[in-house]
Image (cartoon, rainbow over all chains, first blue to last red; front, side, top):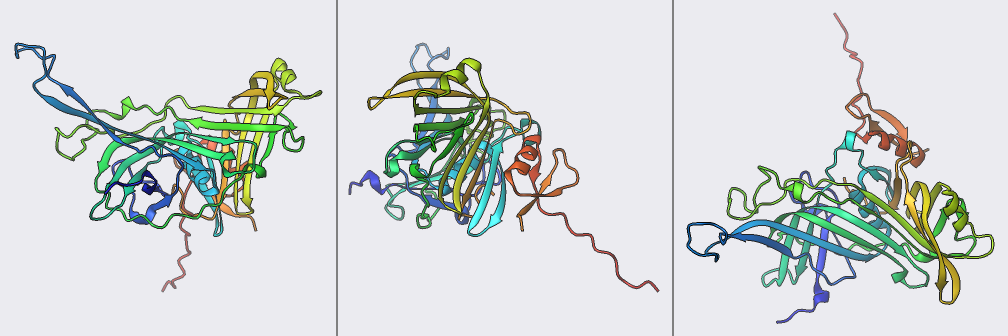
Length: 344
Length: 50
């Protein structure tokens, strides 16, 4: 019987795996809803003997399993729970404090000298009608967040505050997953209307000038470096089953921040661009006192500021250049939610 | 009472207890401090010596 793609269930490690090859236990997995239909399809890379001499022709007579890739994208309405998860797994370093119902996760990028460059791992589960006649039931083990992007727009609907999370995997696949997903977590949304925003000394919400905002983080994970002598196989001990990655390390990381604001007499964006003024950017979103996200870029300048229009009103589109602050680094995220154990 | 956490310096060393406020935690995290369990309490030996 055919299935509706909307039957897809996703679950992933709320806590981190003990190592890249050891899947999350079911007790450490949560189920959340998502917006996109795309699946995290495993891709088998193969090679053949076509170029080998001694066959008498240039055609393949054998195909070999080389390696496995699994990548995915989770698109969601922004909630305090997924924000905490994305910040912790995406930036890589987290300190948990607080107690129920207010768990606080203070997150920063890894310090490569002290922390190394290996990101925390989680398992990702996809299921359609799991059980005896499952259509899809699989788990990618050893996944890491490649990037997250938060988009805040103008308008009352949930779609005006969203997060996209890209992830990559070691390639290790467990099928069937063996996981019975818990009920979906009831998330606390962080709507656009709750935004607080100060950039370079300008409070864009008080002035009622902000139109849209987008900020993110990208790890540029060194995928090729995940394969090293001894990195392992899809089936342990079976050298013909295809290699999997034994590590996922961040490359040259990138922070991004851009926004569109109404442009009026006295607006400072063009002057700030000309003078390369630096300052902080502090972004806040909130559901209630226990469910919040505050992201701070400690030093930003403007790399471009272009005057245009939005719906017939004069606006300025600004791209910021996040810089490294000697004391606080590039950025931090403080995520508060009701959920315990994120990235622990 | 402010929430507190234990942080261990990079490379090992004596953990210290700090207030769990971003303005305190973030500079430590950037320096390489990581959250750790509280150190075990050292109890005085109170047995009587004969």
